[in-house]
Image (cartoon, rainbow, N blue to C red):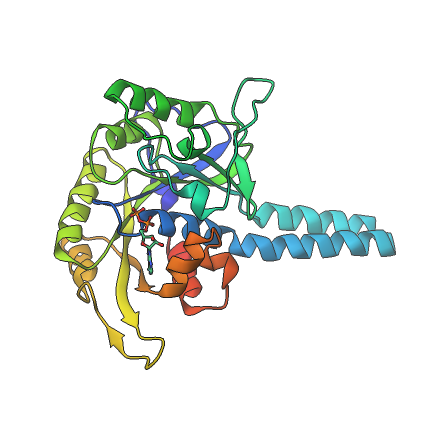
Length: 293
Ligand code: ADP
């Protein structure tokens, strides 16, 4: 469905990037960045398997000198792998460096573009790489716009199938200018089932519609807490709010992510669950979102 996007005339694609998917939320703290990172990793999860196959086929090629067959199979596998990058456009509170366990200053290429920092096979760019960790980000509107422009246009992504953009929360100037500058294949909106978060999610969905960005669907985060001791399930933020909102807006629910200690702990350590606990139900929940996108 992401292929259905149509760009506005003044939009310019990001060099090397096939499709941009933005991850947005009406308000902060609902799990937007955590979802963006695990979604990106979920989209490459199959890719990892393909790479292992590819390495295996290279080994066979060396061992058996079966050059022709290897070449064919490598080409076949390469054509199926997905390259994914993450752009942290949350310039006020960049969290991708911590979530992806990355720090440092991006190098410049010969063309004076910034080279993204890479972990878990995912190239990432964030304002967090360009400012000191503890420096308060107090910017006037114009400075924010030029920072966003830098992040959108001055990064050497190489070739990407998907660029996942972690948007700033809310529906202000920054969000609007991103949607007007680049063609966006679709928006994923993250919300908790709680009324207030849902209200803001609705504003977000309506903003994307106004600027002709297809809303791919809602991710309902922190929908259920399962006690690790007794397995009792509690709907701390309500149960089905996002489903009702999705129905009202006529969009899909792409998935339900449980409120889980493992998600919080691994995120804080820069070890997103999709890579650190790939067999857990919470990783599976993120992978389901990735396959629904
Ligand atoms: P946002 O980007 O919306 O501000 P974050 O992704 O930074 O939100 O998440 C806010 C906090 O909630 C983080 O500490 C994160 O680890 C935690 N968190 C997010 N989703 C979950 C979840 N499903 N279960 C447990 N903790 C979560």
